[in-house]
Each structure stands twice: as C-alpha cells, then as structure tokens.
Length: 178
Image (tube, rainbow, N blue to C red; front, top):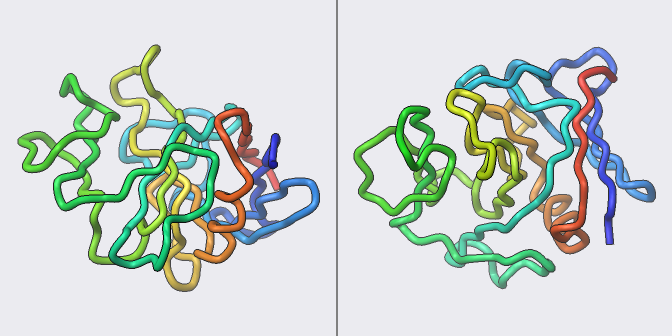
C-alpha cells in the first residue's frame, strides 16, 4: 500500500513530473501552468504544497475489460455523470447529474482521460472556497503526456498500478520545484 506519494517536476520541465512512491517511480504530467501554491479556477495549475487525499473514483466499464483493483470506492461512469466547475453555483466542485444548467465537465468523455479517474480532495467540503479550483483528479494521461487542466495524469498501466495500491489514507504531495 502506498502511504505517501511525492510528485515533483522533472528538471527542465514545467508540466512533466515524476511520481515517487518510495519503491516505484512513474512519469506523470501536471497542469499546463505547472504547479502553484495559489491555485485558482481555470488557471491550469496543479495545486502544490498541499496534501491531497484520494477519496473515490470512476471508471469506464465500456472501455476497461474489468473493474480496476483498488481499495477506494469506485463507480462505473454513466452518460449522466458530470462535475460542476461553476464557482458561483451551490454544487461547485461536486459531482452532478447531467443534463446540468451550470458550467460542468462530462465524466464520460470521448477521449480516454477519465477511463479511470480518482477524485482528489482539493477544495472539497468542508472548507470549499469559490474560485479555488475544481475537478482535481488523478487520471489517464493524454498521448505524449500533454498537460492537464490542473490534474495529475499517468499512462493507464501506471495509473492502474498506483490505484491498486492507494486508499483514503494515502497522502499525495505535489512540490512546485524539481
């Protein structure tokens, strides 16, 4: 079981990182603006120098042959699953059911990013603050490790390896410096 995970930028890169679990290292990718201690909605930054806790996750039952192994609660994504990213809405930074009137992300995406998606506890209740950032997930990386909108992303085989070894006691720290 991974109790502590450290994520650091690769030297010379703002967006590419190294996820270190002690015995394992994985290439990962961060937000398009790198890591920031002043995370704001839509800034493209991954929250840094805060402990992030994996809470639960989603997976695409139609794309993955079997339910990923994990100690976290995991729900199959449906076409009605979304995530509110509208800072002034009461459901800000929470799962919602689609259709939904305010700004949101659909969890069932055409790309593969949320085929396996772990919700991290960034800016969640209690203590949720408007404009502090929403939908901070651990998810599948784009081809070529293109930057995220603020999440941490790994290649699917690496993500499956990590998810099988984390639980709600795991602590993830993103460091701004390499």
